[in-house]
Image (tube, rainbow, N blue to C red; front, side, top):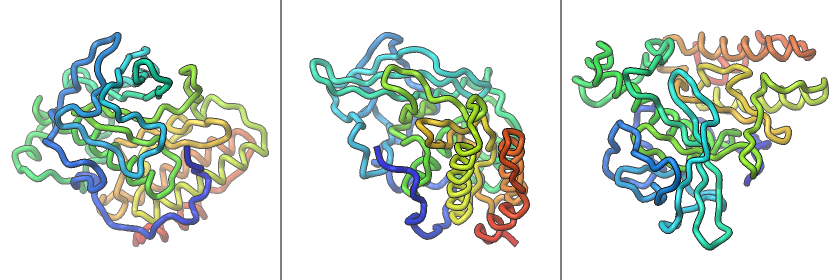
Length: 296
C-alpha cells in the first residue's frame, strides 16, 4: 500500500468532467446498467467479465487479476438508501493470494432514493438527448441511467483522486452498477470506523484535520468538491483519514452551485471538529479553497 499522507507532489489541476469516458481504464464494451448476478457463496472472479472497467495503473501489488481467482461474498458491510456495500474475498485457490474488497452495489430503480440528486446532476451531461430527457423525467429508464451515472462518476472520481494522491479507496473495477473498491480495514474483515465513530484526543484531532485540509486543497485545485462531506463519509484507519462515498462529487466550476457545495463541505466538517475540542474557523479555509478552484 502506498503512503497517502503526502499531497505536496500532486499534479497540476486538469479540467475534466465526470461523465467523460475515463482515460485510465481498459477499453471494453459498454456495461449494462444492472448489477451482475452473483453466487452468494462463491464464483469465478468478475475481473474479465464483458463490460468490466479496471482502475488506474500502475495497480497496487495487492490487486488480484488472475482469472483463476474466485470471489466469495462474506456479507453486508453497510446498507444505505442508494447502495449496499458487501465484503467480498477474492482469492486464488491453492495459493496465499487473497484480497478483501468492498463491493458497492447500487439499488434497483424501484428501491432507489437518491437524495437531492437534481443539484448534483447540474452541469453533467450525457451524449444522448433521449437519456437526458428520461433522467429529467425520472422515468424507469431514466432512473437506471442516473444509477449508472452515479456509479460511473464515483469510479472515475476515485481513480482521478487516487492518481492525484488523495487518500481514497483504490477503485479495483466497475461492472454495471457494481463498484468494487479497496477494503479499508483489517485482514479479518473488520471495517475501519467512520470519523463520526472515533473519539480522538486533541493531538489526534489536529493530525486528522491537517490530513483533511490537505485533501480538500488537492480537490479544490482540481476544481472539485466532495459534495456530501461529513464525519460519516470518512474512515479512520490507523490514523489515516480516508474519503469515501463520492458518487455526487461536484465540478465546482461547471456546476452553478459549486461554491455552495464546497462551502457546505467545509462548514459541516469544521463544526464536527470544533464540537470534539478542536476549534476551527471554516471561513478562511473556504476562501482559500474557492480561490484555489478559480471560482469567481
